Image (cartoon, rainbow, N blue to C red; front, top):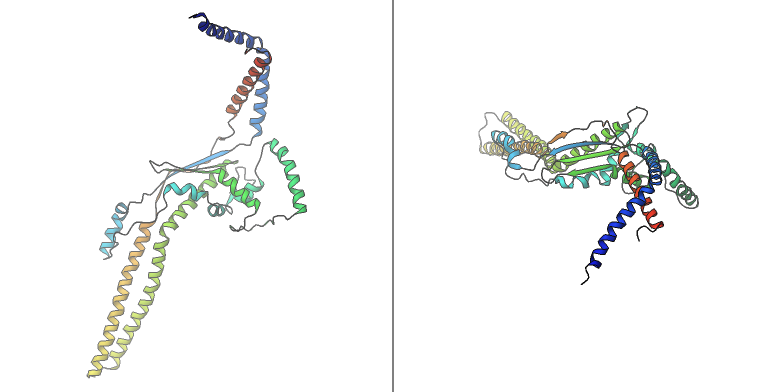
Amino acid sequence: MDTTKDKLPETEKDIDIIAIARYLWSKRKLLLKSSAIAVLVALIVAFSIPKEYTTTVKLMPETNNPANKMGNLGGLAAIAGVDLGSGTNQDAISPELYPDVVHSTPFLLELFPGQVTNKKKTISVSLFNYLNEYQREAWWSYIIKAPLKGLSYLIGLLGEQDEKSDKVDPFFLTKEQKAIIKELQNRISVFVDKKTQVVTVSVDMQDPVISAQVTENVVGKLQTYITNYRTQKAKQDLEFTDKVLKEAQAAYYKAQKAYAAFEDGNKNIISASYRTEQERLRNEMTLTFNVYNTLAQKLEQDKLRVQEQTPVYTIIEPATVPLKASAPKKMLILVGFIFITLAGMTGYLLIRDKQLF
């Protein structure tokens, strides 16, 4: 076998690489000019994109451990003669579902009326109006959208237009409202660490103060939502027990007054009918008192259960106004433009002058 043929391709490859390197070096002025143009374009693009500020909050939700949560309350209940039992398993929302809750349409609609104020205090409007009227875009976005807006305007003149309304109906959302909901979904992110159960809520806005305000609002409404979900059944039981207790109290007071009135009106009377009526009234009063006493204990039990089922959140990292913009990444844009330009120019020159063959 002739081994020179096997070695020839490797030699040719080495020669080709050296030749390509020399060729590119001879074109260095053109490549430098291209890089300079790329830097100029990258700077224009980077400074045309509106700044975005990110506020992040980290919180630790309470773990659903009935044994730990009932320690103190169980002792208080025992002193009061109330048995809370072991039925402390709530249908608690898992932290893994928090992203779905925050991105749901009803949750986002509750954020719309919240008032936001920018850093310069020149804007003080609802979150809906801020996202709808005060968002900056890159200059090329207006050029791209101009024909589409003109076309949609003509279509609107010929057809039906969506009625603009300040009221928000979750069942009938306008295109404008749907667009704002979509944008808000993209600006709010929720991440849950499956190991530690730490929940990270981040909000991106074009103003640092508004970013912090919206983040606080999202976290607060999330806590309220979870609390209402977990305590809803216990609160309903508490309201029902309180209602029945008032009725039992009225019945007991009525029986007590009837017994006292009978005793006052039948002094020094001893007869079988008297003793029978007296016993009946006494039994009725005792029965209503037992019902009233039982319901009073049940009311205290329900109060403790509401408190026991109310979740506690530990804020690990509170919301603070960001000092630096999180986007755009100007250095990344600059490096990207230079790399793409050099790669494109190098490929073009090599193919044009047939340096690869």
